[in-house]
Length: 163
Image (cartoon, rainbow, N blue to C red):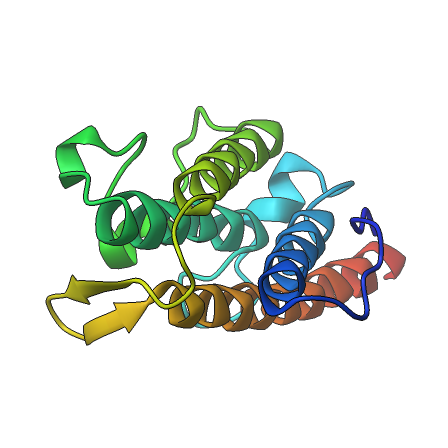
């Protein structure tokens, strides 16, 4: 796993940012080394695929950091703002393309959040008032959950390789 330098103690913001970067790296690592076909294989009844989970994570970065925290209109965000369809990957998109999209969205999220206080709040039309601290915790939870999903898909893919 390509984990950022391990941090186990420090100020709250440093710990939150570390854990978010850690879960970002874990999610990316679940698709590294998969073939294009393997990354798109549907092994569960839903639309969930390994590459689709990373694509969705890029959308989540844009939604929460660019649109909600940064206040950008969806039309000015640097990628598709398509909700549940965010799991869908175009035929012309590769694993490397989707990883790069997620990394770009993550880098922009870091820049937007850098000078915003953890207690600063923004409004979300469905959730209500949220703080940057809450957004960090939500993204950590979301990316960790999706990395777990993708780990299972990768394990299933590995099992089909051996048979």
